[in-house]
Structures are given as structure tokens and as C-alpha cells.
Length: 295
Image 1 (tube, one colour):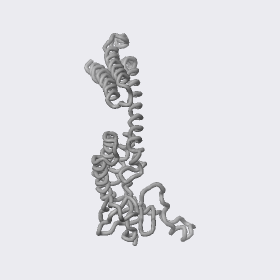
Image 2 (cartoon, helix red, strand yellow):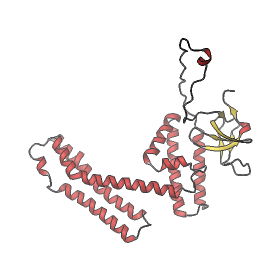
Image 3 (cartoon, helix red, strand yellow):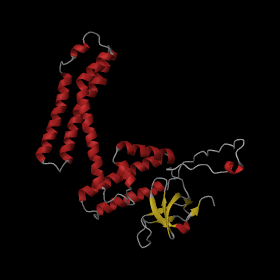
């Protein structure tokens, strides 16, 4: 009886009652506060409707509806059936609202950062990642695995500041506002810190010995390169290296790359080279100062 009561009052009742009520009401409040593009009367109706939906979910759960399923000595199957019949419809409704809210949030972020996308503070790939919570988590996890836990946490800070940039842009409206400029500088600073964290050492994969009958030329061929995987080609000298957003030394440098930082050269224009760090940061540097790996 104790276990059955635990299932009923904690696992099923606790989830379907107060979680649903709070979730539905909270989405209504958020809709009223954030959808300023809608008339006030419309927002009030939506908020009131979702509050009533939350109250209704609580009322239905406390009502005697479907209680005959729990008559006698109900087991886990009867309890699950009872919970699905009384709570699943409201839970499904809440899930749909959450999906719609996430879609709206993603679209808002894309619009708010349209002028920033493709710059040194926000790449187009990051726009796609930041618009989805799961994508942000996967990016942090990948960074933590490749560069250590501190890099994963630092990437989380960078993501928060990039989202804050969208919020500041929405609040002030002026792309040259001091608050926007300050937010951009904060993002650039975090990028430099993240670029300075070296990748964790990876155990080398030794090539297998040549099979019998394979010509010596084929046996000495280099291993195949996996496309789409970042691999360094150059290294920053011991004296550090300044970087620019474009191959123009008259502009203010956007970062100072740490000494002996490994980078990948992806584009060359005269004495300038555009390099990419392991975390996706990119900028232009003096190609003559880069050290070629392996030499």
C-alpha cells in the first residue's frame, strides 16, 4: 500500500496536478508579457484562457472521473491507465505550447540578430545553434569533450552573452548604442579566452602495417583526412598575434591570439590569412608571422 500510495500521490498526482497547472499558467503569463506585437485584449484573453486551462487540469484530476479504474486493489497498470486518461490530454496540450514557444523564440532570435549574423561576434552557424536549447547543449558537451570542462563552461557563458546581445538589440533598437557595443566587446573577450584553451591531447591512431602484396608506394601513403573535422595547419608564434575582422590594418584589432595557439588557415589574401580556431572563432592575421606545423 505504501508503494502504491507513493506512485499515486508523488509520481502521477505530483506531475499531472501542479506541474501542469503551473506550466499552462506560466506560458499564459509569458505570452502576455512578450507578445507586444499583439493587441492587449488579445494577450489578456490568451493568458486568461491558459490560466483556466491550468485550473481545469487540476479540477479534472481531483474529480471522481475514471476513479472506478482504481477500485479494489489497483496495480501499476491501472494507475498508469488512470493517469493517462485524466492527465495526458492536458500534458499533450502543454507539450504543444512549449514547442510553439520554442519555435517563436528561435524566430525571434534570428530576427533580432539578423544584422550581427556573419560578424566576428556571431557566426551564421551559431545563429542556428543558439536558437535551439538542445543544439546549445550539444555544442557545450562537444567543447567539453574536446577541450575540457572549463572550455564547455566558457562556451556556455559565450552562448548566454550572445543571447543577451539579441535581448539588448531588441531593447535599445540602435545597433550603435553603447549597451550594444559593450555587449559585443564582452562576446569578443570570451571568444579570445575560448580560443586560448588548447585541445585535449588525443591518442594517435597508428596505421596498420602494409598487407602482403601491397606496393611500397601505397604502403607509405598518408592516412585519409576526415572531412568536416577541424585540424590545425599553423601555430601562433611565441610573441602572440593580433587579429582583425577583415584584412585591413587600419581597423581596430578584434583579438590577440595567445602564444602557440594552433589554428587552421582557410583563406589567403596577399600577406593576410583568415584562420579558424578549434572553437569556430575566425579572424584575419598577418600570414607571414604564422608558423607552419610540422616544420
